[in-house]
Image 1 (cartoon, helix red, strand yellow):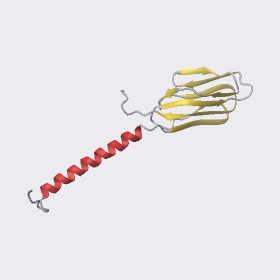
Image 2 (cartoon, helix red, strand yellow):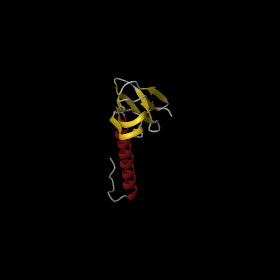
Image 3 (tube, one colour):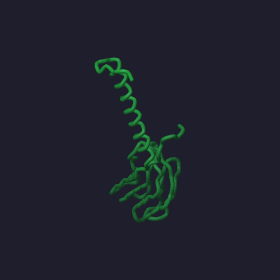
Image 4 (cartoon, one colour):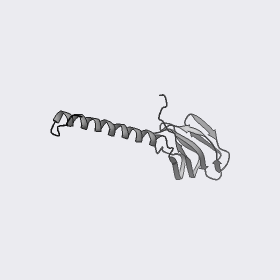
Length: 136
């Protein structure tokens, strides 16, 4: 075995470069593993007097909506719920849908529209969808 010179700068540069590579690889592994763990998501909107409300996305990732509660004013003559490119007519004042499975991106709309105006609520819940390995 050869002796190592502790003052060899080239050797220290190689050691430090190797440690940086290991640390970057370790951080990438941590990020990848965390991306695989679904995170619970809640999105909601409320208005005391409107004809339309919109729930704002809380994440930039895909979300799998697994349930929703839409409440429109008593006496509503027409109500629709738009989730992304899908529109659903609502027949009741209180609408509870569970279990469901609807994928929404951050750009997809979440709009509850009704007439006449009055107090309303829209509450969506679900999980983030892991995006590691998805093709774009």
